[in-house]
Amino acid sequence: MKVKKQSANEALLQELGNKITNIRLNKNLTQIKASAQAGVSKRTLERLESGSSIQLVSFLRILNALELLEALTTILPESSTSPMAQIQLKYPQRRRASKTGKKGTSKLPWTWRDEP
View 1 (cartoon, rainbow, N blue to C red):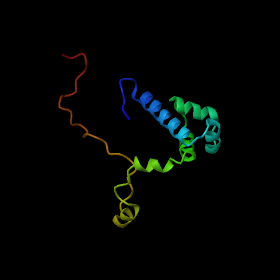
View 2 (cartoon, rainbow, N blue to C red):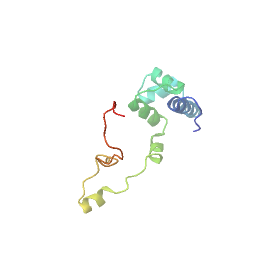
View 3 (cartoon, rainbow, N blue to C red):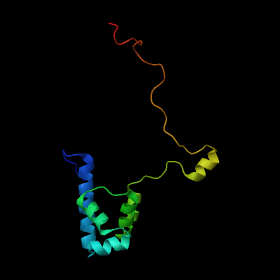
View 4 (cartoon, rainbow, N blue to C red):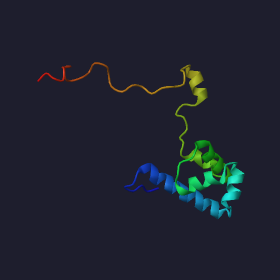
């Protein structure tokens, strides 16, 4: 997907909508049939295809109806450590990211804004 100068999110939504439309048409499905198979309203599918945002669960249902759900696994990387390896190492699974930088390492001393 190539993103141009317009808002990156808008461009990606538009590109995604175009691809979903093309896939649906290649499967010879109308919006009514595809939305019924996905369990979403026709309007939800229309919004996705037009480049508007929709709820994630609706997006997943549409991908499933178009037999594209497994394609998501190609963009989501596997965990670097398998669950079994973490059990063997007896380390808890990471739940938070580490803070960046160290406390109190400012190069300049603290001053009031009105001091020269």
